[in-house]
Amino acid sequence: MRLHWHRRDLRVTDNPALPGDDRILPVFVHDPEILAYGAPPVVSFLLDALDSLREQYRERGSELLLARGDPRAVLPDLAAACDADAVTWNRDYSGLASARDRAVVAALADAGVSVDVERFGGTLLHEPEHITTNDVSHYSDFSDFWLEWRDREKAAPVAAPVRGDVVDPRDSLDEEWLGEASETAGPLPSLAELGFDDPEADVQPAGTDAAHDLLADFREDTIYRYEDDREYPARESTSRLSPHLKFGTVGVRTVWEATEDAAAAASDGDSRESVEAFRRRLAWREFYAHVLDARPDVVTENYREYPDEIQWRDDPEGLRAWKDGETGYPLVDAGMRQLRHEAWVHNRVRMVAASFLTKDLLIDWHEGYDWYRRKLVDHDTAHAAGGWQWAASTGPNAQPYFRFFNPVAQSETYDPDGEYIREHVPELRDAPTDAIHEWPTLDDEKRAAIAPDYTAPIVDYGEHHERAIEAFEAARGDD
Image (spheres, helix red, strand yellow):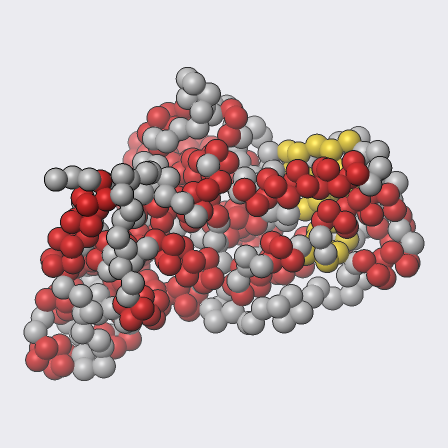
């Protein structure tokens, strides 16, 4: 019998750790140390995904074993209690996850549990050690990474286990162990029982069925418009698969296979280029995972070292206005309000809001990272740290320190009719489109006449642009 520890692979379909000669006993452990980094939207999605995973095992005549506690204690006890021959799990790439993996391996050995331990690559298409530079280090330039990643052969999805492949823990463990250590038979723990409030946002459905429905819809239509439409938040042209990839409710091999099917069915070169544009997004996800694996400190430290520290500003009121969507820059505010309402934000708007925080307000990117971590359902350590450091000009392949996302120009270009802004900033719903885009440059009298309930801009874009450049040049030691 093999014990499989589910973490970020909450699926039975296309899970490379599940096939094998041994029968599988599946377990998920609510780890307090990991939950300490959680937030209501993420944990809400997690519980929904676990409910779906449990149903998938029940359809196969089994049950997902649910436990709560330190995996260093739970897994050795469980492996001994069910007389397991092996313990498997899929890799994660943060420093915390890697340390936990090593600790569990050591705990199994210290407990005298004689099992084989094997870790699989069920989260990425290519593991960090397989895509390296000539000196066997990780890539820091995405363009070079993309060329190698793109041309490497991708593994096909693997078959799901069937009835008979999976052990029912109630047949393998005594009632005392099940009753004291697990939550298998009863309902899933609530958010409150895990220490969380209900999410402020309306979190999207989780589970494999929801993920595969999204993927099918994207594959049939939206992927062919992705290249042209993906930057326009009102067009709803993204896959919305990011939380499913984060929790593994869909396998990345399955997603890649869908892109192959889409490319084969593409009617012209433009459609194939659109499929390729989506594949680049998958590659960005893996690029940042490889960086995190090599440099776990990117969550807390700047990847790119400056001779002197960047003098970030301490601006509690500016930070509050940014979080609440009350900066007076309509596209920024629309994104921050979408974050509160949906626990998700369109990627273009994420970048605009991140640039505004780090460059226009000159507030430390860690503040933005922490807020997104608490509010986004698709928070992923690697991609979040990479994205924030990209916006702040401190990360690998980051935008130059003198590059800014002008929120007025971005609004005019990517929400030309003001449709997205009107949806999320109701104070501007009846405002003329030109006034929406020009809002930060209008005088107080015009703003009061057009939308008296919407805030005036909290900063002057041009002045703060210069301030940020001076701060970065000082950190660089430029004369």
